[in-house]
Length: 550
Figure 1: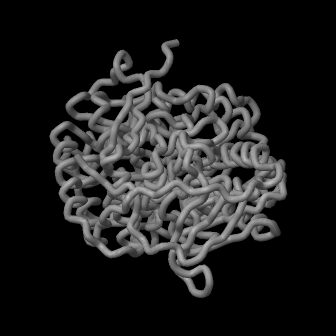
Figure 2 (figure 1 turned 90 degrees about the vertical axis):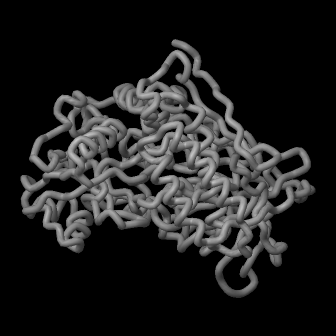
Figure 3 (figure 1 turned 180 degrees about the horizontal axis):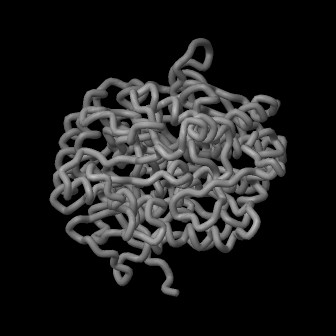
């Protein structure tokens, strides 16, 4: 068993600040939540971000944001595509909320300043990605959609007079009341002046929008700040984490060599949506016959097909062929990807692009209701940090930005309604659990190697057992001094412990969870969700929650 700390070892807070709401994270989820709370209430909002405000994970999103905006499309069709991609374990109410509220949310995003690409008629241009049967992906700057959305939201948040921002801050642990409700958090600010070092924020509501968990793997499309801080905090606070075993591996990440580590360059699914196709070393289009959508099948289908072909041929990667685009299309439609590939010595106008699957997105996270609230009262989660039920076992392409947008607005509505009256005095705080030992920063590479080897795209009982043993040994020899690197590494180990426990429990193959020893989908026994919580001894406990039978 893996026993992780129930609280991070840290110096006592040397400063404190009060707010009505503290939002942690500055991607589309955090920015949307903070902006909408400020627009509809006089609540004091504190927005905390690990880097600078404009550096949220949203800026890395290339493909776009999905919504039923086009002629002939409908929320019902978007619903069906999402449910199919989610492999039977989506929350249907959450999906209906997403697809019905999505079009208006995207239009509002354009109204506040996001400059989407438009056609000659002035309508938003729409592309297609894997799993979609309609053109419904709105994009900006060709393949710079996330960066444009980030820019527009940051501009509006900076204009909001009642949103205070603290940058370069790593969230540590939740503060709670004696009855278990959220009452703020502790954090460490890497800066100078009064708000330097470890401090405490007292707040009546806490919103976690810290992004993904990708750094638990050696290769990922996630930025270096994606160390699962929000999910780890929630687990230590007693919150339920759901569907954490469903980690999506993007099929087409540029292959940089067998020893490449860290953040890897993504080649957006939109490239295949425009007509690019996958081939093996012999030039065979192996996705034909794998799925009715061929190269545009859902991501789990494509990733598994790539790995099967690599196993069969002994190749270290496959190829993406987009040479038919020509130079002009690459420069106009995919300028960012084009520039990145050229910098790597790959000219996609003339060359095949070497690609492999790599960790991309966590479909699970902190379990929430339709208002974004977790199992801990007053603790909310949004975006990739959350498990709203939208994604199920496999996220449909470009639904992630839409989820952050729609559910960020819903959290804002819930918080404004609940906290809109006069503020009560700060609540008493519950005693904190004893702090545990921290993992030294060098343990991060060992953890990533174990997770990549045994808990990646392909899993089985032997590998998961080995991962449990080796991660447990890493945690057992912990003894690092408090600091950003040891806090992050301990957070990664906490998330890894939950993920390994859930993946071990789910003895079937479904969506992004592929068990070689249980290769079939098993709706009789596993059509449901796995919830994970931390026990008092720091080990992860799992609970299977079956979905109602239709």
